[in-house]
Amino acid sequence: MDRAEAPARALSALDQGLAALPNSTEIVQTKYQLLLGIKGPKDAISFVESRAKLDDPKGVVRRVLAEAYRTQNDLEKAEAVLRELIKSDPADAVVASLLVRVTAQQAEQAAGKDHERERALNEKVAGLLRDDRASFPTDPIFVQQECELALRKGDFARAMTRLVPDRLRRR
Image 1 (spheres, rainbow, N blue to C red):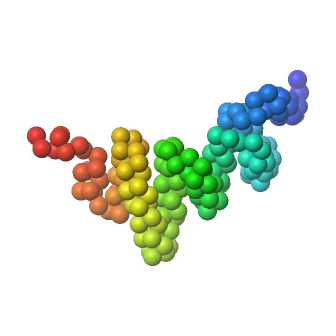
Image 2: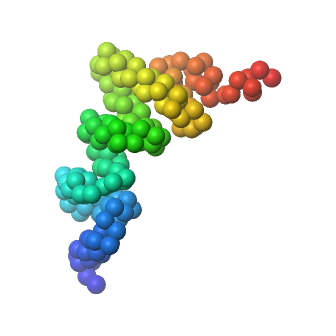
Image 3: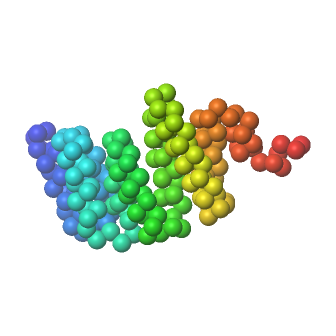
């Protein structure tokens, strides 16, 4: 096989895989990555957007789309997709944590440029985390995200109190 033919053959194989397994996260992600490398972000995102418009009952392709938007720094679109997913399944801790991550990333980008926007976004993250800790009290990802928020705000004591359980600090 000629090296020049390899991407076309790979795309063909992925298309065959998608015909058999249309909601396969792995195949969608792989084709996205391949398109990103050979055609660029616009074509890669367009592919995932088109897949997300198809029947996606569990939202797996829309998760890939949200992550694709996030990695391409289109955080508002990523946030919109994640909010849509949360509306359809409010008990999905993974999507909830991704929304916190995207909102935190927006706050990080605002840091040093727009103090008021950074503050507002950090407050938005704090609100999301309050809700998520109530909904998912045993999920450690939200403890980690609370620590990250405290560190971003320069509140090292709060980060430590969130990280180290009370029972270990009282020894």
